[in-house]
Length: 370
Image (cartoon, rainbow, N blue to C red; front, side, top):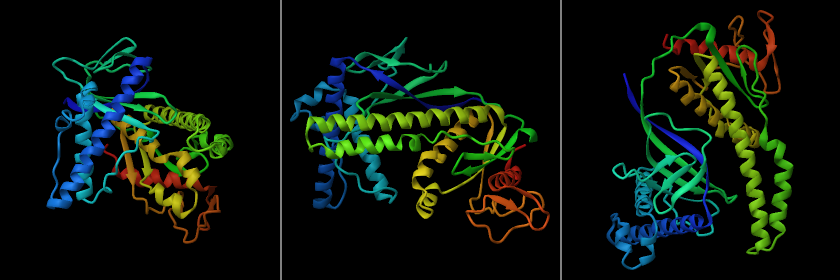
């Protein structure tokens, strides 16, 4: 049975000088519209005790320059503000803030009009409203039958432009019949990202740790420059580029690992860990964030789903580290410094993470749809 799906593609955008000027105008107008509508909402609520929303059209008579940019970018600013306020009233998020002109990351969203096919791709160019044909790095093509719904153009702190395209399509996924030989358990490892139940390690690159000294040096250069000077801005861009490069390396590494695992195994079992709590409680913030376990498991989730395979999450309170994978006896005391698991009952001795990975696989097999 065919089902609809939404999917995102992210590309590097290479606009010309005139197109960059128009992008900067659109960023500014979208930010201006957000601030104006938020200010009106605040004032109206203080006066009447209820919420009122204005449309972007109500500002165009007073501010004629708003007509120069894509109208859908302004409309999406209104939609995003409504979502933010709804999240606040439902106590899911904090109250939305005003956007600063000095923010290093800027973006706006526009929609595709299916009647006119306003956003479309031809070769290495994408057509965008008010911008025309913009060159981009198409490292991956859209699948056949996928329709572009909307796209978000972003200027990163390093000064690069990216475009995130949301598409809609139909797919017929046949569930894969799971073979026990192709079921694997993964235990989170601070050192290697994960250790699998068959003894493999991820051999993670630790991109942040490798560039930590360079980032510290560039950070000092920024702090030594006079605030508001051109030299400080140049130093800030250098620092932002290094951070962006580090993040790109990490993302590339995680994509390759998750792609290989999704192709090789029918079902993967992991623990549903609270990584933020772990980083705060154990003071391993840098290592936890550098591993990006949450991002890695998210990649595994959608890659397996696309192939008709399964990602099983077991309860984080399952004592996978304390149980003996050979006899099942639970050890009451096991400190974090003990890296070798030794069972006093059956004599089983093995790596602590490997023992936990085997227990995770055993616990998760019951949740597999055979």
